[in-house]
Image 1: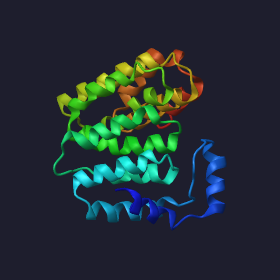
Image 2: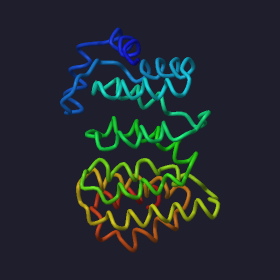
Image 3: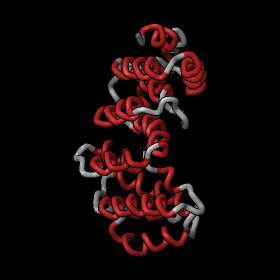
Length: 225
């Protein structure tokens, strides 16, 4: 079912740009050389045309091609705040992609789609909690990227404050994992939260900062000092 959509992406291929993307992302897969606005425009058109069941099917097929732009398009097909119906199919598909993550660009696009589904049904955080125990770098990192919506509330409701604290407890466990992408994600999460709850970030860094890499501490406090 995904073939016509892959053909639409392939029709816009730019071999010269594709080679640049390959060198930049350093992941061994096919690149077509599309720019993000081109993928955005196609995904927006397809979201308007496809019913949810078909959209999930097309997204699954595009993802399975392992083509860079097809995976981005798959994620963008499912990036929508309100889905009708918001059943489990889209969320389960996004979650099934997590073990495939091998680069930040694809992971972040998929996590953006996942953020919408988590906000729509926060009980899905229970599944994300399992990712924090993974040996796979990108799965562990995804638990922070996908929960970024809980950094952006100035006046969180009690339930959302509890969810924020839950993620902060994960981060407290992460601080001794000194892999660059984990530390970068820690700094990113805390930096975003600092815009809305500076005191909580300051307290976290005071408690755990010595275990963090220096660049992650600096990133966490960028807007505070």
